[in-house]
Amino acid sequence: MHRFWLPFLLAVLVAAPAQATPVTQKKAIWGPAQLDGVSQFPIYADLGAGIYQYTVRWDAVAPTKPANPRDPADPAYHWPADVDFALAEGAKYGIKVSVMVIGAPAWANGGRDARWAPDDPRDFARFTTAAARRWPAVRDWMIWSEATKKQNFQPLRADHGRRLKGKGLRGPHKYAQILDAAYGALKAVSPANQVIGGSTFTVGTVAPLRWIKALKLPNGKRPRMDLWGHNPFTARAPNLKAPALGNGYSDFSDVDNLARALDRAFRHTRLKKEHHLKLFLSEFSLPTDHANFEFNFFVSRATQAKRITDALKIARAYKRIYTFGYLSLYDDAPRADGQQVERGLITRDGIRKPGYAAFKNG
Image: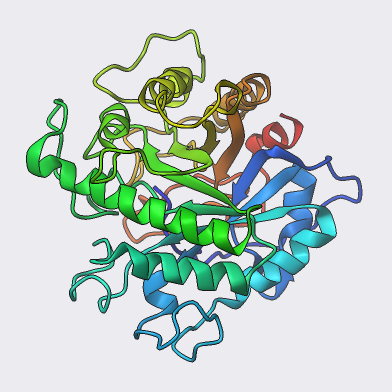
């Protein structure tokens, strides 16, 4: 449910205390790299976030087709300066930068909007090669976001609660192709690059457990990846002992079921038992204060804090979770209808919610 934009914030810049929490890979965060020219990385360090997440849109970086697509210096490319800034700031605090690549330019997908996958997966792979060469310090690369949602990825057909077949397989097969092509390209630049695939969330046009079953290349093999990306949004308290949501869905309380589904699906690949796919939980949000346009629920600020604490306790204890990512540092920008999402750990006027301390101490 990431918005793919950094909202305009009427915020008081918050200075982090001198004593920061040790950063850990188990915690990741979405938010601005800087506000009004002021780095937000002291805040991320205070929270103990070991991974800063950033979205790079292929369609924005390469609106016209490059002559030398693997060369980051090709004049067609317009790289966002925020990634360079984030890498420099992150290095000061031991915070890694994770890049999510999304959005195909019209020249690559037959003139369609950016949701549509490229006609040739090799075009996407060439772009990821250029991006990895542009930012060699980036090691975690996420391929698309919530590809199981029609608003984010096409072609995609609803599963209607049933196993995909026929034309319904076009979407997962197309995604598998761009994922596998990107894996080969990124590993060729550096074997240290980690590729985050899967790109599921709690529900979706295609439920995550049905997407896992269908995620295959045209030759029937599974696409290559290092980590499985999943956004486990939920209206219930995180608890691995809770009953499964069912219908192929997977919220935070179902991440153990998700891991078992991955083990079944990938059991015939070359993944060793001790190297079963870990979960890169990129986005988790708990909106507070009032109803909003995006979620069908909201919680009190105290409940937000309690559930963040519970989620981080599980993330630390459950070895299959690589990282737990929170979206976002600040509340969203106001909307005329008042339905903005108050998802942040900090309000727009710079007040830290109880969730800030929960994330910091979790």
